[in-house]
Image (tube, rainbow, N blue to C red; front, side):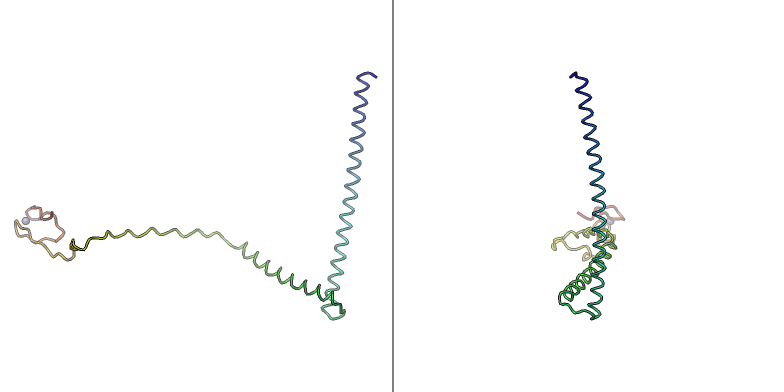
Length: 150
Ligand SMILES: [Zn+2]
């Protein structure tokens, strides 16, 4: 067998395989879809059956301990569900609150040693040069210009 024959045979095999895989995929996908749909319908009927049994049990029309147990468990779950839904609503309504900026500390008053008499204690001072009365805070005499503070 020539090389070309070999090659065309290989290609043909690849084609068959691809076709097989495609058909297999199609078939399994279809079956899986049908199975999912049947399961969904069964679940739906079970739900309806359960709802009906729950209603009958609550209405006192059937008395089965296992049903009473299930109904009680369902009530409990529903109560928790209501609480969780409320929590969720609150969580969804939460808004980000900018953290209040830390107020910068008030400038600390320089602690003045008590020996240095506070300025308020000193009364108006008198210029030793000209006798002018001036505020205790004055450094130079406004009248003659003499330095009156060290
Ligand atoms: Zn003076």
